[in-house]
Image (cartoon, helix red, strand yellow):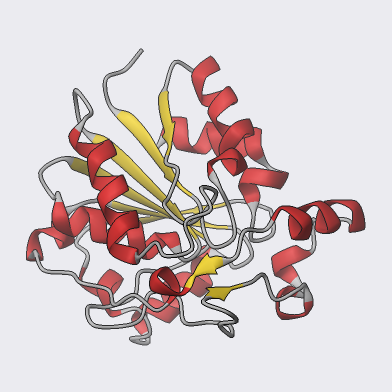
Length: 227
């Protein structure tokens, strides 16, 4: 098995089990996959902060015998990019699935209302259309029932990006509910400054909604193995 590990970071409301199908297929492909249990997303710690989550990711990167390909999904694309900024010598590649990194000084995921110190799953209305097109009613009910409210200290944490060497780390953008052409257009228009400065960005298309680890696990695993 290769010594380079694939570090998997789930987006909002997900725990590490969201990657089970992907991990199973990656292991069959002789890849070392490590889904990270992010503080506050599955352990009941509603006081967890963005710094706590970053520390968990960095510990996973630092404990690896070799380099790490860090995969971020949705909001966790920013978390993956923060890891590249903190460990540009150990993160060999960043894979961004269905999201883009926020800039230094911006809130991590201030997307929905905070209630009693957490950001609960807001229901399916904000995700109608391409985001959830491949989730049937049964899958939607299961997702909503399992969704873990995100601690306020994570959602409203401030992103810190300090090392310019992050722009040297190769980036692969996996495009689920949007196309590679759309992603390139958004970057060219200046909407994603961090990726505009990245020196090596490639694009991979996957025919899925916003959660391909749930609906296209085998295909996503194949892509990650090839990446």
